[in-house]
Amino acid sequence: MQWTKLSEQTVYGNRWLRVNLADVELPDGRHLDHYLIRLRPVAVATAVNAANEVLMLWRHRFITDSWGWELAAGVVEDGEDIESAAAREMEEETGWRPGPLRHLLTVEPSNGLTDARHHVYWAQDATYTGPPEDDFESSRREWIPLKLVPDLVARGEVPAAGMAAGLLMLHHLRLGQDTP
Image (cartoon, rainbow, N blue to C red):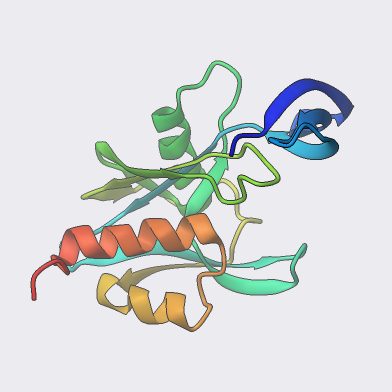
């Protein structure tokens, strides 16, 4: 059963987001006003070192008043390609420049409300370049053993859905969890 968007108009916008109102026709012919949020793409990056540790940040999110492990992430700037944005964000937030990035997955964290897409990348190596440029992002950056990821996610210590999905996929990919 497909919903059909008949029109959409912006009711608020800034450089980060737009709040739009859509006129939607339901399969039975009824109409519904549906608010949606249009967001810029988000680029996410991490690295896994030779010891199978993943680079993560421990941060507080004031919106949900919660602490948790995350990967370096940020919006893709105008004219910037997603992979370059992921590399830039990782270096700015962690002080580590990733080696060649590989696309891991793209997720839509809340596709009933927003068109946000999080593009997650990873590298097999990284080079420390110095203290992070964005020192306000997190005071704690650590290499966490990849084998601990499922337990961190299960305990709610990776609260962001896109981050949890990316970390679990990376765990599966790197540690070969598809074998019995």
